[in-house]
Length: 81
Image 1: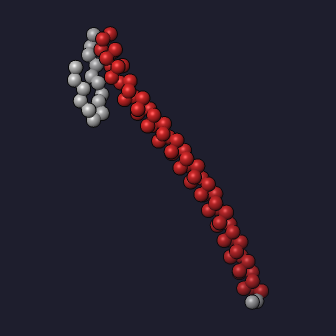
Image 2: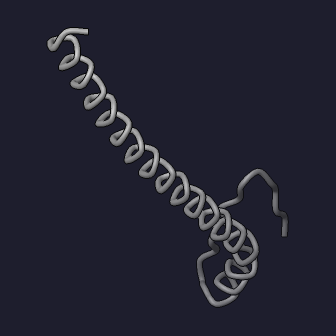
Image 3: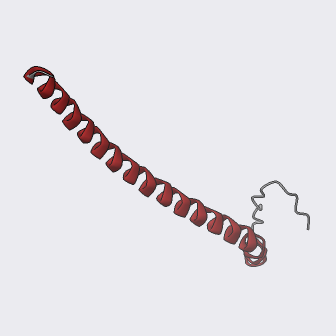
């Protein structure tokens, strides 16, 4: 192997090392984003469940103390009085 080939090989190895380092950084950031997304999904589910459990009692109370009847926003179900 001549000197030029050796330099080219060395340069390729250095560039490959740099690419691998960048890939490691990208993978770490992606893992952080995935974890954050999972946490947010969990939080959204919690809020959704909480809303579903308190919306009917809340509107019942509001309708009892209000002169105007308030319509209950219902997701995929029918509520009758």
